Length: 113
Length: 115
Image 1: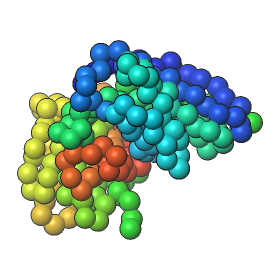
Image 2: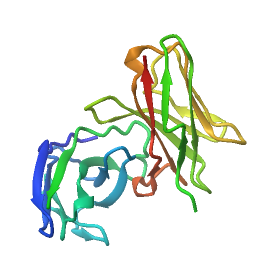
Image 3: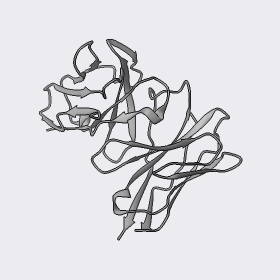
Image 4: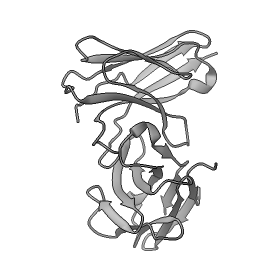
């Protein structure tokens, strides 16, 4: 799996958009970008994933650069409950199941009231 | 539809004792994964099981750790003769298929503390 690089922490004001960057410069053509988050004392929760097109769901938007070397997760209107560690993972899918999957240290997003 | 259930939520053991962690996957999920999260670290894969079979245990320590997922009942992660370094949060996840990380659901974890 391609290695990812994320800032260790970020702050965002409540109600504003939170933009979380992720670098994955060694990503392969068949690798997807996945985002998970882990709220304190809970297990990780899937947010969104994409291959090369931008994606949006009820939780967030995912913007992937044209060269696919980086991506940004956007939480459009952050709330205090969005305070969590956000993980960016690159994984081959199908074929790359959750076995062998490792989460890095992610970005600790703190939403300020 | 209940989510992935893990118990106990907190487990305290003295050095040398055994720890048994239980995980009931979501209904309809036959694939179970165990992960360990050390303090201030990310989650690391331990073992992948599919009903009655261990598919991938490449992340399991070679000694003292074992896992099972019987035909009936929850998956069990067993740690024998625990040591202080085993103190961590242990998470279980389940999915209906092997592929598709978007269908991977995690439990709330078991926090193991070894005194």
